Length: 452
Ligand code: ADP
Image (tube, rainbow, N blue to C red):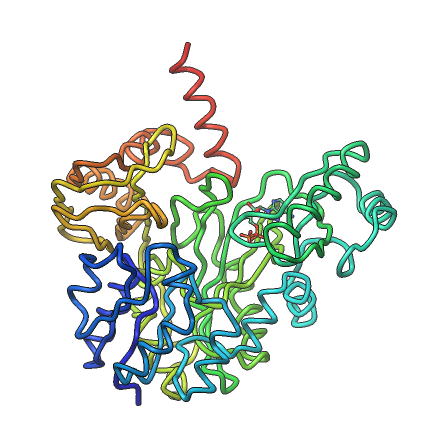
């Protein structure tokens, strides 16, 4: 049994993990940089250890410092949250070597899914539908030309080591291919220290639909339905909902079962997300994230499961304890990401939060680590909170979201709250008809109209 968890993260997710531990009677250790001394996760944890200066490479990514913090406090497990070290296979291995439980999948599965080419090949072998594309890495320009011509334009050149929406180049036609291929390789070498790329058919107007899965590492796995994360800006999700307004019950069951079967066969342990693009009724695998996602609360709202508690249980060696038939889906949930950013230019807006008033009431959940008087440091991600609303139907959810946003007060810094208030007035949002390009096009259009 896990007795003390070190939370190797910060912000709202550190608090999220802490809450699950507290409910289970598990002691918590917060780690923090010198910039986060007054952070909420530090205040609420049973113990805390400073692991370095503000830059993430010297603190939240500093493996020796985190390991030392485990030794000092006697933590027997580490929860990595999302981002930072959550998909670092070497970190998982090092913990294992020190007899500390990594709350996540095996290092082998992290490594497998972290390499996009291997991930795609594995997915295809497991019966998951994938985007048509090159058979593995494309090593020369000649080969790239041949592959692209064979499958037809437009095509996307993707970095095998890519992530976070980076390392992708679009070629609309043969004239654009050489440049796209060469730039993708050099950019990916510079960004990831690896210039391996592959080619994929570019889907024009897909939705982003991902399936949440959970395995016990002992051959059992279930799916917890899908999330629709099509509202994106620069490949970053800004709004997520479950269930997807685009799927019917048959499609939901079909893709969920395919994914759960694949994950069970893999012997995968813990929470995972299989991401798809969805167009014209077809699903195309793009990647698997081997960790908890930012948007996991929408799944929790419609299934009633605490995903962090499940992660802790499975990491302790427990088996799943329930079958697919025991999981039921109820109602609708939407999450919006509240960032400390200008709602029009998206320029970061760090600084002192003077007042916070969080919305509440039936069906409203706020996952956030800010408080009145808190100073948002300039060094980290601008996500300062997530507003999650739950309702019997999507319509009720939208009404509730509108009212919760109107109640939400964060003063002192700019936030993306006004963006969501504007979005709610859009018929496309009300009807759930958006695809992955809609938000960026809408932002451009409305900016132009305002400039005129
Ligand atoms: P990352 O790991 O960087 O997030 P993904 O492969 O998940 O990369 O892709 C990120 C986003 O890029 C997707 O959500 C989608 O918006 C877009 N994208 C990826 N592959 C394709 C494709 N084949 N066609 C069209 N858009 C794509």
